[in-house]
Length: 533
Image 1 (cartoon, rainbow, N blue to C red):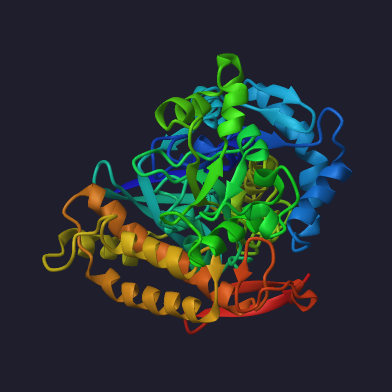
Image 2 (cartoon, one colour):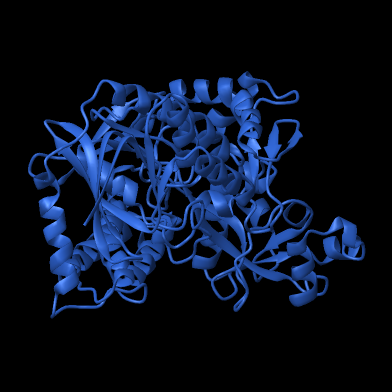
């Protein structure tokens, strides 16, 4: 077993975690950052499109706030949105100080140069900045339990999948910046390590979670067999036609009007496409994007094409035929309940980024995610550092013993199943896509919960013969927690709003202008309640 001590432990090396670590260090705290993957890699920030929406170059904070709440269908935490909109412009421009190169334009900035990995333009320089400051970064470690003494979080227990041994962290404060749970779905553009760890960690530590039913699907992603599921937007989707196999215009048929589609109508267009597929009007589980005229117009001029568009033209003959497209799981709006400083209500526990609910409400405006992680990453880091100054460090290692014993049982288990993404996790991803995905109904959601319960029965039987297999085995229970939260909250909300569509309750209901809150009950069951805005 290895042990690390610090004032602040930051969990995650996406944008929120890196920004929190920088801020905590600047406040004079000793900081350790832990990542399930190599630092700055295999997280949602890395694969983001690199665009930040913020009050810059003519977009006012008031306009930004109004847009955010409108797209969020009014379920946003207005306190969070006000801070987000007021501080966003200054915070994103401040990233230059940490080595981030950016392009500034009206309403925000953009970073990165590598298609599909634009977010590296954010994470890579920030990791280098932290290393230059001497901040400790622990890689390839999955955290499975926050350690609590007298009601306060004092550290965490985890497993080093690369070196195959347990790790214990002692800290005066912990910042969760673990991202979302997009990898719970069969079709996703999120890295496969984004399985909802942070939701589970916070839940078992006693924090509340909100809005877990709201899972955003990006509506237009390539669905051609054997090709990457590129996200598509811009001129291709705005000037092209999205049609079903009958040639009907899908947005027009379903009255999806607000453009750009991929920024302002993600939920409505995703639902429209899947309703066509479920009605039998699709093509191999997809609909068609006819951009032939767009490619004829622009395709001959290389300077007008992105690398992705050239791929579509040259490899998929997009100048000559329509392309199959379908929605893809992209982002989770729900998460831990936290205040404007990232405090979760559990002493010593702070959170920032996609793991937190409330900023985006029922749906997220394009470009808001990277601004969110920047604003609230900084705030959570500062708050955690301040808390740690007043909190004793160190705890009895007996707090970690139950988790260490569990690791030993999994690692030395003789009978059982070898965990893999082709096993329990792949079954969960299929279950969530089919029964708790874009188009939902009560019976399907009950089926999802029954399926999750069945998979829970398999989880204790998992054994591992290597560190890599330990990673999969330890992910499974936390992924099941996150999946259950999504399905239970979706079953509770008997209306359609934002990214949540119930075909048995297809209309928005003003009586549901409230949040669904989840927490762990004293009897260890998952408790639901509703809270007025």
